[in-house]
Image (cartoon, rainbow, N blue to C red; front, side, top):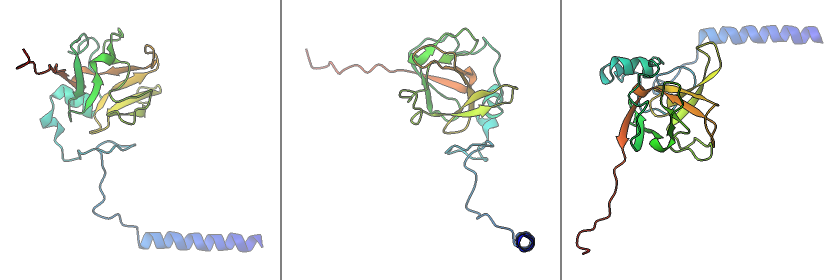
Length: 189
């Protein structure tokens, strides 16, 4: 009985191999990758035809598209303390509020949490986390959910209540100050 099963398996597997060589499966032309990076995919509106080198400065390109890191203590937002929102330099998505920013002493702007986070739920935030072992240790890379730009890394040594330190490159960010909305006082004298 076992000889029969073994022989049947060989015949079936040879037939499957021959069939797959003769008629390979075709991927429909309308299906295309939804992001520019390998591995996990995000729902990005940008594709391979976006010319990031024309859109960004050389330093911004290296950091955001090639996963580089700016020199510590060199970023323009390291000691920045104006009230407002930090956005992605590539696609202008809101990423971090100035209210979550703090001085970690590490040389890069640090944030307690991403904008849109609710009690560690980042489903409404504009960031995604991705495992990063490129430097020889297990780290967590932070990417923009909209355009896959590399922003920095997150570490579990931050302040309360989150205990997280989002260590973000300044060149990956733009800042928009909060506009104070003042009530219309005209005609109420």
